[in-house]
Image (cartoon, rainbow over all chains, first blue to last red; front, top):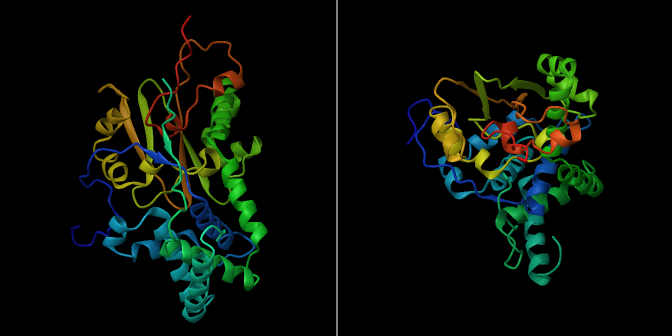
Length: 112
Length: 207
């Protein structure tokens, strides 16, 4: 557990194991998550700032650091921010996610 | 030795989409339907991401090694000097920290994963992981040893913690035995990891 006043993301100086130097190439969906942030935060749109992304990730809590991958935390935060700002509603997000899942089930080889 | 590591391929999409993959597709399609962004813009942004690699940073380092006036400008205002080479840092402020025989620099983002992506591409997994972020500020010599890098005790080791608005890049020491080399040849010695500061540049091949 972290000490009082220290957020779970604030890990500088804490004990940890050896560095695992293995790397993976990013999947297309991960790059798309990154692209969504880049576009939403660009000069044309200014709908989301990097510090808002980070605040959203920090709010996911300690379990998110253990159970979710990097870009899973990002899309969770991007989506949470868009809902908070009213750019998306939870109703339309729920409907769209069901639609995407239905499409994938009907055509498992199809692109998402 | 080479600093390229084996890259595991992205997992095949044989199984069903994960919950967060579904979320990404749903959010992207909703934003497109609302006219906030277009599918072409998403594609172009991913392509730009794929086009960025440590070769860009290597070009900046090689220029600094061969052009002292450029090096001075790079250390004074990293973003402006990179713009001279056509590298747009976007809104982030770049601070270049120079290694010397007395000082070795290494960069980290303890709070998240801030990284000079305009110069190096997307960060390696370990840069974003707990072990590196937690330990490199507390026991940098030990962490660097895990990368095969031994920093003598009489060399000062400086660790720089990045922020969302400001990024660091390490200007490594030019390897000995490269006198008279041109920029393109020098750039081939400059690896991603030596611009993060966890290794030294490649050595020139010995004769």
